[in-house]
Image 1 (cartoon, rainbow, N blue to C red):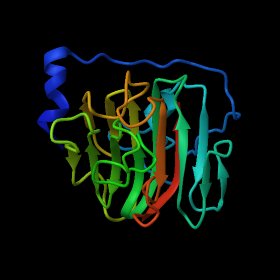
Image 2 (cartoon, rainbow, N blue to C red):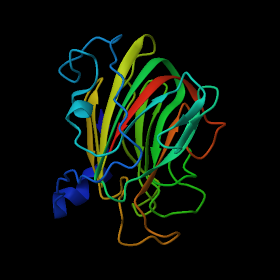
Image 3 (cartoon, one colour):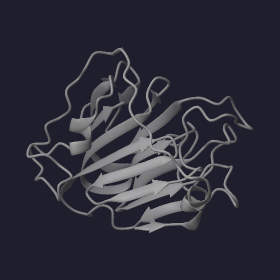
Image 4 (cartoon, one colour):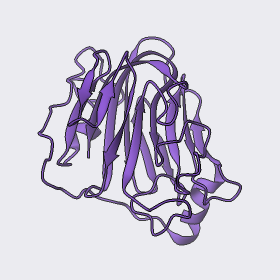
Length: 239
């Protein structure tokens, strides 16, 4: 795992605090996470049933499961899956952390893409909608985290790991994301804290209104359906 200097330099100078959960009333009705019973537990990152420890421990009031193998609308209408692909918006206004647990089989291309702007499409930057436009995503076997426009020499690669996933077989990917923080526990650890990572309610934005919205692409990027992939079967969300 490579974490670039930009991700940690400001934390070393100013310090970076931890963030906890804020519970709120369930809006869309609780949906239990998939049991992942077809997956073996791995290195303490999963329970005996195959679901992630982070997901099981999540106390967020909002939960939903997306079946990427079936066309349909999920998460109270926030996501629509068509032919195995989809994108949607996660409103984090009353939450401080998002836990994402996805099952991927034989992944190719862009599979999981979480961004601070709906027009992010991998590689950093967006269509000048927001200066807070950081993103983290899986592409083939790698994970990449790119900075927002506020970083020096933006967009900057904050961190990556070219061997996050295996090319073949089914595997569980679990990621917890908070303001300025990205933590992956499965299939292997990846931790990044940076002032230039995804933000929740940033104090200002030079290109658009500051907000607490994140955007998720499943087997595609949020900003471009042409940048897509294959392999996601289910995605469990808790926030």
